[in-house]
Structure formats: structure tokens, C-alpha cells
Amino acid sequence: MSTRIFVTATNTDIGKTYTTKLLLKEFASRGLLVGVVKPIETGVGEYAHDGEELLECVKQLNHKLWSLDIEDIVPITYPLAAAPFVASHNTQLDLKKIQMKISEMEALCDVVIIEGAGGLYVPIDEDTMMIDLIPSLNAVALLVTHCSLGCINDTLLSQKALQERNIPHAVAFNCRDNDESFATVSEPYFLKTNQKVLKVGSDIDIICDVLYNL
Image (cartoon, rainbow, N blue to C red; front, side, top):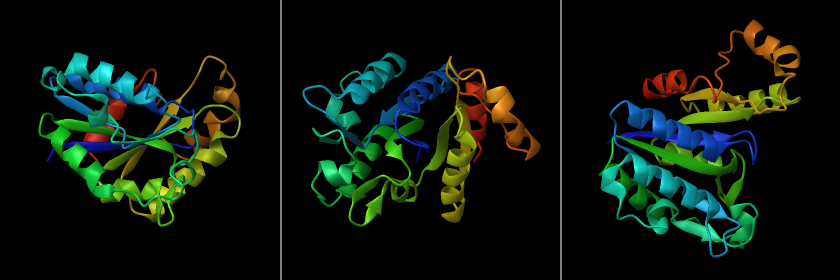
């Protein structure tokens, strides 16, 4: 079995796809064959935006994946931009379909990055939250968090959820250009409490090392 890494976040629009592409590129630079699956994408009309980005990226990094189509990257899509529970009208999750796509992908690679949708407690169906996919898929997790005001609360809540489920994980901060205040209003707390402040933009190599050894 290849290494499976599930990329989740403290909320939507935090930078999961951006981070996933950086992980793919970093692992590929080490001579590893990479693959990617986004199990569920909502807000899909004729174009699965995140899935297409990931497909284009991974095809450039792994020659074995040139024949793949978007359905191989995103097996489940819904047109409404909402939590899968709502977008699917509470359709029961087809976990076997997701597992099959990941198994097919990892037959062609050493590392599979699995990108979640939204945060950990996004409902998929009546019985399943996004966090439930991580152990079901035998993956370790990368929690991507933001650097704006409020990130302490958001990060700690998501970390607690992962810890309570005994899910091995790392945390990465996706600091954007308008997050200049992070160093003075949030980062001191994490440093004081011995939290590794690994930033997606500058520490992707260290993040990959941590994930690969979880």
C-alpha cells in the first residue's frame, strides 16, 4: 500500500487544493510517484474546478497517469455548492466507490494525496462526517489552517477533533499576503505551547517529512 495523506482544513477556502498541489510537487521532486483523489466535490456544473486543477498537476508529475480522466480524480460530484449532505439530498455515501478509485490510483504511485471538502465536520450523509473518511481510508491527516485572527480557536478545535479520534496528523499554516498580523497576534501562542508553526508556503519540505513519518 502506498502512503495515504488526507488534506483537510479548519473551514472551506483555506487552501486545501493549493496545499495539495505543493505536496504533490514536493514528493515528486524526491523521486516518488504521486497520485491524487478528491473523493467529493460540490458546486460542479460542467467543470470540476478543484478536480481539474489536481488532474492537470498530477499528470505533469507522474507519467503513469496520462490516461486518467476527471472521474478518476473526483468520483463523486454534485452541482449545488453546499455540504455533501445538502447537495446530495442526504444520499448515502458510496464509500466503496471512493475506496476503489484510491486503490486504482495507488497501484500507479507511491504517495496518494486525498483532498477533503470543507472542514472536518462537514456532513456527507446522515451518518458520516468528513472526519470519518480519514480512518476509513487508512490515511494520516494534514490539517491546513489559516493565519488570520481567530486561527487559534479554529486550529485548536480541529486538532482536538483529530486527537479524540486518534488520527495521526500534522498542522500547516497557510499564510496569505494580508496575514501580516499573524506573527504578533497568533503565532506567539503556538510557539509558547510548543506547537510547530510550519507554513505551507515556506516549509512544504518539512511538512512532507513529518507526514511521511507519521
